[in-house]
Figure 1 (cartoon, rainbow, N blue to C red):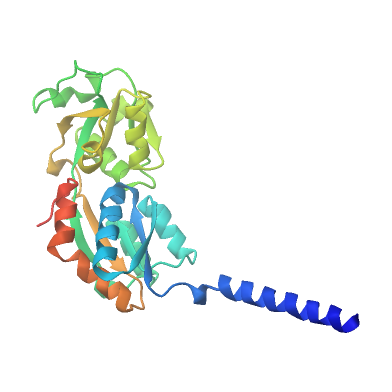
Figure 2: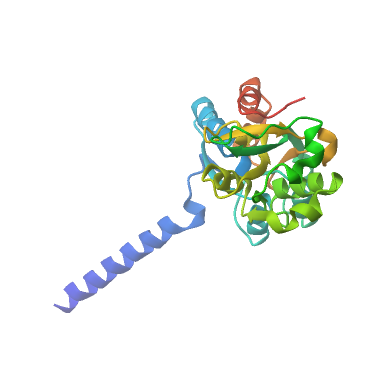
Length: 259
């Protein structure tokens, strides 16, 4: 009886050991990479991940959030292979902490900022003349990404400040956790106006673009990519794929601009 009990105990310990071993980070599949990417490139990165897997067999695990939240996750020790940021500031921040490979930092694509309204709004018309009175052209609230954490929100605020609209709009701004949430607020009719990326606006069937802001109205809306400090063959393959025509065509199809 005692021998049987000892055998069962050993068996249970063996099962526990196997279970813990399977949970170990060192046992993760080596045929995959982890990509942390800004929310505004969700559609693009999902498509790139699919095409990359078809071509190489390497699976891409995607983590989407605002550039700032992702940077904080990486700072806190989150494991990643590649980081796509909509903000040069957050990329520089991780570089200052030596958490990304400085030599791999590159400008990927460029975006534009547009004004959007719910699709039901057929009355509002904006052009290069009427845009001067932008705050007076609508009475309700305007949704933008939270300028403190979301690059799209920072660009929106720059546009407001550079056009001297910030005082009139200050009490009407509804900050969102990311640019997709700002778009959602307009889709749901929670706000009358929104300022979001062109790439996000053109994907929605529930909003319409009423104006594309001039490039000079804010800093260049560039997206940056970088790999982790210690590269490997899977990461090198992914970075190489991003430079291929197939990946570039996916960016362009989704409204981004590539030199």
